Length: 332
Image (cartoon, rainbow, N blue to C red; front, side, top):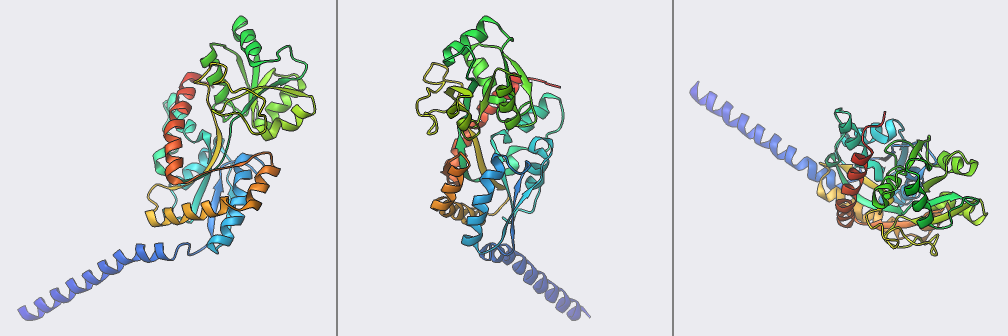
């Protein structure tokens, strides 16, 4: 009986060792076969916005490179928080990705202002690649009294809180750069939130507000058509769409630097080989002329950074975003 028990224990140990070996092999097999099924690229906003614009050309190119369908899925709600939290908690196998914007770090910080638990934390996601990056343009109506950014700022300083500006909502992408300008230039203004960047520009055109920060592609035709006047840009370098415009940094407001970027993220626990495969595939996609033509046709331009460079960019960008949110404070 003792021998039978020993044989049983030995057999059980061998069986458990075999199971452990198979379990250890599974991730490697999965990584080697990646992608094993269609990839979902989640866009946390409705169709038509910058994240959607960024996603569709990339998805089409990745399908050809990875030989699997890449499905763009719009999951709007709560300013992008719902979809971002969904991807942060998705299986970390590379088949569920996120196309996020520069408000990624703003959402958790704004929730903390209200003593609420953030729906996600930035460290639950890992950057794969940046695909777009546009510095916003400061615009006013063409018949406004301000012909330069200096004149605009001087008026805001002379009448604190009197000049109005529109954005796509509290803590939204184009709210933050205006707050950075207010702080850098000591020029308090009155924020009027709208349901998106497009409506905010329409409000400037209609005279409902006096200024806005807007994506270059959104205002280029209005500036060229003589309906809006562009005063400055928020980038470190001048905007390719508006090369004649000074940057706010050039004018002495160095801390007013902001980029409306779009980039691909994966759940943080995604294995390194899968992240590397996605990184390389996006780099190949971003080198395709037809993808860049699609971006240019929409008034933007490709601004690719690989995973390492994108992580370095975020290390500089995130503190600026967090500081702007804290400056805004609680807005009901």
